[in-house]
Image (tube, rainbow, N blue to C red; front, side):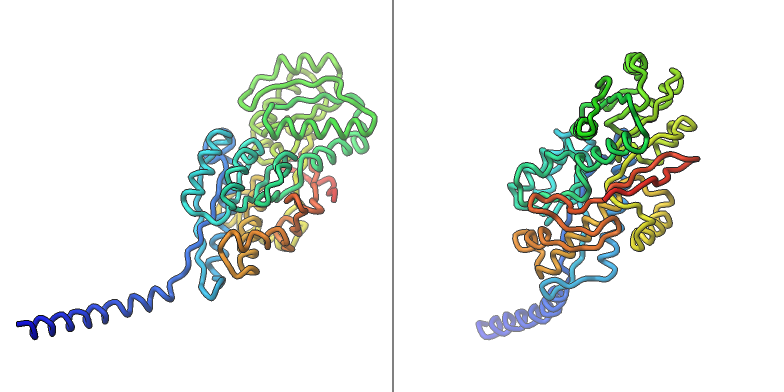
Length: 382
């Protein structure tokens, strides 16, 4: 009996070994799955920005997986872990922790400065690179080695708008409104600094919030100051009714704002009252770069809509991470993080290189005005 039992045991072991061998061989050739985190507002009044960002990030993931690339002698398959931060700092920190718990190797996000700034500490503590379009200068002021800005800062955008307002539009009486968010206040502050450097100061500054829709009281107060230009630090959902109400009150002032104003949504919501107003976007116009033109065509073909705003920068962010991993020959953050810091990457929106704080070097700023039913580029400031 012992002999037969031993024989059966040996036969079973050989059989199992035969079954497991192909599995082992298959496992050896399986793709390494690398998770990349993404976060933006995917619900609420800023969802159109967030979906644009997510669309572009998924395009980048699909482009990478179509190649595919090899890292550490293993084919890599990228997976996007997407989260909705609702443009809310509190939700954003919860999202950041969930992304860390899910094992992502890098995070492309967030969209809002007010969300990116508190989340950056969580990513820094975990040693995970964060590539964001946050424009408030405070985003890169904490000294975190994990923090990188994919666009110019408010000092560049606000500064460029301030110079354009005075030097090109000959604005003499400028009023300022901001929505008290980290983004809105930050870009308004930098715009005012630019005015002051040029020997001017606002005739008045007013404040609102990022949920407001009725600006009658604020505009009535400003109208008494007879401004020829009103600067708004905030999003398109508020800028559009602001423009309409300015027209209704008989104010002939130009409206000017940063990148969150520079969208098709602003024109759609404001209608004819959007004409002649100005905005600035951190980055070069897509059609000024060969790869930008290609991206724009492919984006429209795939999603059946125009690029909203900063989706192309999210595309570039994914590609920068993958490029750093390839150069480091590793998907481990501790190994490829230094290679992000040394990035020299030609993206669809800019030639990317970062300074010691993680700011984008030589960040272009594109200033546009609404003409007809579109934003028309007026100048690009480098």
